[in-house]
Length: 621
Image (tube, rainbow, N blue to C red; front, side, top):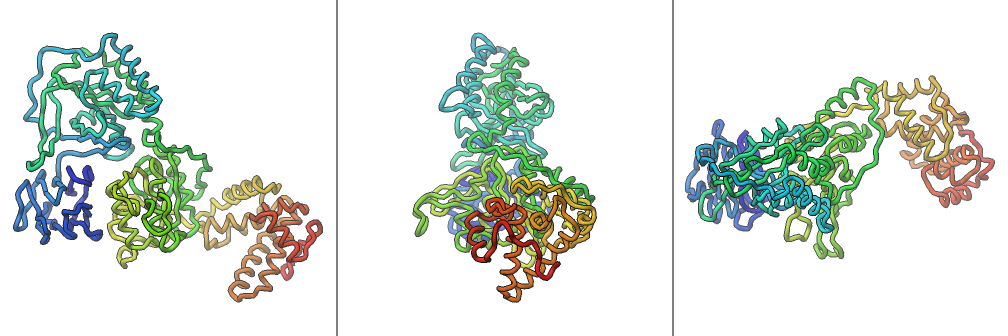
């Protein structure tokens, strides 16, 4: 698929895949939205011609340029052509990648050899050893000193600065190996905000082979001068790319550029590799994205997957856990999308970062945008303080939005842009903030159908549909019902003090034959209710049947608006909880998921005696 790469302007480093007809402009309904006051609402149009594209101006105020020339008619594009729109320059199908820093303001630019290979100068024959006097020991001492600086402790930038300085370099970057994705990630560059250009083949070789690679003849520099076309320049110099290992695994590399040819000849590669891995390995293994604001999530029980249907879903999920792509979890209500989303998060490289779960239908009308994207002080009436939205709260970790189709169309567009560009604007903000998160969406509806009927943005669906896992309904997971029921009972007993030994075989048979309209959510609710009902330490078949009847009776009474019947059912449930807790009102409150004052009030309201409450269901015995 062809693509555009932003090489200057506000959207620097963003790669846009293009297909069919592509509109570019400032309006939010454009395929590619450029936030630039010099860009018209619909500025340019790209149209696909067989495998390539042509670009035309859409009647913009400032015109569209190709390779520095303003066009007046549609212009066919060739790979490497540069499109100018406002202050933005976009390369068409370039042989390079831009990796923006995740812990800094710089970027690593990966250049393909075909773009510079003919310009490589010959190497100098005079070596100039770059290591300081004292060799590796001096390097280790300097790196340890920088890493222990109280203003920079724990920051990858501190160690990178120490390494570049010790090797006599002018610039460098820290690269993290990809997790089942095509591209690595740039963690930080030196100097701060630098754009460091290096050969893509060099990065791939070091990450694949785990061996240091030195070059004594040339350095690369990608230049975007004002008024001229961007170019890849080759300069005399030396470079070294050092693998970072944690245990036996190569997890990244450090690249250092020295502005002198053959400056690193005779370097002690093995000793240098050991020093670099010792310093950077724990940082990358701990994920430097999280060093600033991450938090460790508690462990959770693994999903129950005895049934073939759930085993198939878990096998599909295992393919996506270590990837950073957006993930779509589809399934009926109550199938555990939030639980599975947290499981994916805890099995991902972002596991030490925050997990933020949001249900779209629970967002208050009129406040959704502020809650998701945040706002600045004074952004609107009542905004007395800055608020950090859910997207920013998930920085370094994972954001899950369940029932994503419930977001209104404008929010769907804002979310799409934020995910595409890795940036967002808080309400009332004049500057954007960078996003770094894994996005997971949950959906009950078929999003393909929703994108066709206009209730869901087709581009957002296209992004999510690349990695989708269907979660089965509980009725299709019969083998999972018993272990799930036992897990829910154990948790409820531990929380409330109920001493239960489990279910009789007959009771379990009833559970396994039930339809479970709300899936796992219904099973959990039933287990907790029947634990309160049971007379002994094991749930009997009659306990389950009576609880099903009570739940159905409560629903029917609500439909009829029968307040007397509802009150009688609530009175009976309170009576059973008091009996189960032997009159201990605090424990009865735990069993019913409420508070002691509420229990006290209900005992008076229903004229119950805590120690002698009846346990007979009227009409059910």
